[in-house]
View 1 (tube, one colour):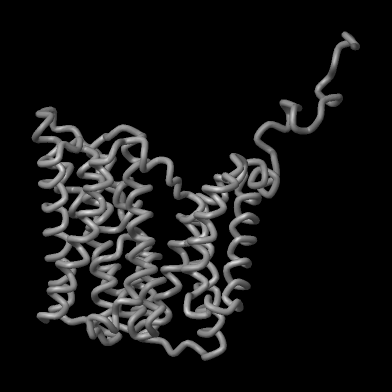
View 2 (tube, rainbow, N blue to C red; view 1 turned 180 degrees about the horizontal axis):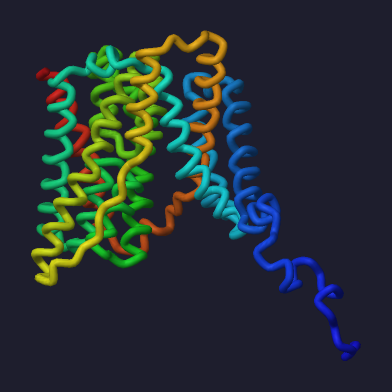
Length: 353
């Protein structure tokens, strides 16, 4: 080993203080794990698209196959630590950007198509489900903060609502993980099962889309279930679900007010703005005013489909079934009961309206 003095020029670029902060963006991206995670998500997404060619799987969309494949990979083989950043990128940024691109498939005329009745169904379902879940949580002995996270994830928009709600509830990290795992599980069950129930309940595409949008947990899960039953069902489900997502901010603000009153110190964080909802509405408005060429429209639709599938793959990779056993049986019963309630309550309103 040499003990000779070492100058800055003798150091590798990565260790040279003179080069600190000068790392190329591409190298920095790779070093944080975004690229390996994206590659893993892309590989599983490709498997999902290829699996659709097998007999018996043609009835399922690539999005549904992708989330199942992701869950199997995650819980059987495990997710490499260096890939988690890319998986998170796919589940959050990529997925939300894809939802914005879906705006090119809708116009303001279609948005108005769900009507005041549809908006009323969404709002009533959200409020009733949240109150039901929190109340039942108290009755069966679930921690109040965990019950609020499960209530928000079920009634509003899955993991995004759980994370936003935790800003004001300040629950334990394991409670957040549990709530996300439970919501992902039952949301996936809904995504896989609801399309099969549409003919059983006599729902046309509009009614099914409204039901899916008002009851299924995650935005991507709603889209996966909705488009499984047709274009109109998918578009209606998307609009109905994004109406729920738009109610995230006022709901979290209300929880923040309740938390501040309970603490008595007047402190509390502001909830994050669901920017992709605002962007989605802006794209819908643009698409309503400007005629997009058919070739560009098709390319955008294909890109959105692939990115949505990648987002669902990432969602499956994030689902850890073992987390459902870590907090006992009561929270799982609560999440399941909330899942049944929101499905039954919204279906009843859809059938009545």
